[in-house]
Image (cartoon, rainbow, N blue to C red; front, side, top):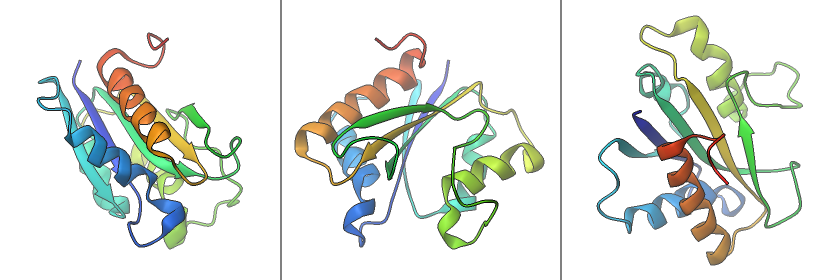
Length: 148
C-alpha cells in the first residue's frame, strides 16, 4: 500500500517545529521505501487536500498540546477527525482538525484507508524526534495496527 508522511508545523514558532524536525530526520534516511512519499507540509493547511485524495495510508507528524506529558509521543487514528476543543471554530489556527473535517466533503479522489497523527507533546528532544521519525516510517509502511 502506498504511504505518505506529511510533516507539518511552523519553523518560526518553537512550540510548533516538531513535525519539521521529524521531516529533517526522515530526509537522512535515504532511500526511503519506494512506496513512501515524504512531504514537508509546513503551514500549507487546505493546500494539502490533494495529497489526501490518493488513497493509501497517510501519516501526519505534528506538535500537539494537551494529549500527554511533555516529551511523550502520541498516536491518534484520525479517520474520524482529530479531537479538538475549538468547538467548530475553523480559523487560521484550526489546522489539521479543519483539514480532516473538510476532506470527506470535497474529496475528488480516493480517501485514505488510514490516517494517523504522530504527535509530539511539548518541546522535542533529539531522542523524541528520532523515535517519532522511526515510528512514522513504520506506520506509513505497515499501518497503525501492525505497529508494535
